[in-house]
Image 1 (cartoon, rainbow, N blue to C red):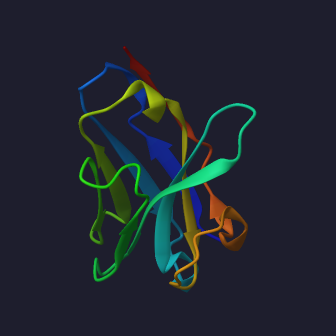
Image 2 (cartoon, rainbow, N blue to C red):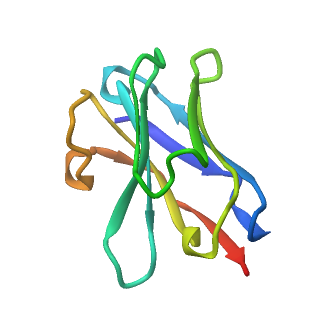
Amino acid sequence: QAQLVESGGGLVQAGGSLRLSCAAFGRTFSTYAMAWFRQVSGKERDFVAAITWSGGSTRYADSVKGRFTMTADNARNTVYLQMNSLKPEDTALYYCAARPYWSASFSPSTFRSWGQGTQVTVSS
């Protein structure tokens, strides 16, 4: 399995922007689809966005459409999540994940590889 390492989290005011990065070490077919999830303590892990390395397929949660953009840099084996117009409700621990296929379901249980998470805090 690939090792995923996130970075880029931090504290930002509402309306501000952050860019998260996820480097995939040992990238293989197992990382065909990359995704971002987020989790607030005591709650379930929620899907945020997903992409294939070719960039041919992307998907976003309704709550982030128009504000977040996920991209993939094949040369750097890194995916990014550009987050604009941040809201306090975007505050969470953000995780990068990978699985070997693309499908319409983005349940966390279908992803095999996970990063350690990076905290995003949006103040009002």
